[in-house]
Image (cartoon, rainbow, N blue to C red; front, side, top):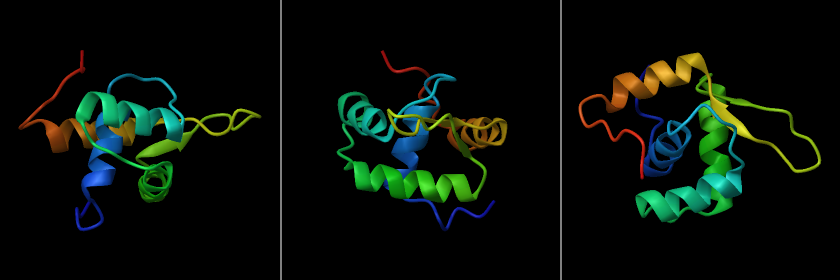
Length: 94
C-alpha cells in the first residue's frame, strides 16, 4: 500500500485505534489523540482520516446506532499498523 495518502492526522488516528481492539467514536479518538499523543485533532479531522482509512479497509464501522458510529481496526488494519510502526513501536499508552 502506497503511503502517499497518509498524513499526521491519519497516523494519530491509527495510533489511537491500535491501543486496543475496541470501537472508538470520532470524538473519543480526538480526545485520546489530544490526551495521549499531544495531537490536537478536530472531529472533522478525525472523520476525514477515518474515511481515508475505511477506503483502504484499514478501519471498519461498528453498529452506528443512536449514539453514532464507532470504529476499530480491521485485521488488515492491525497488520498495517504493526508493519508501519514496528520500527518505532509505541505500544500501549499508559
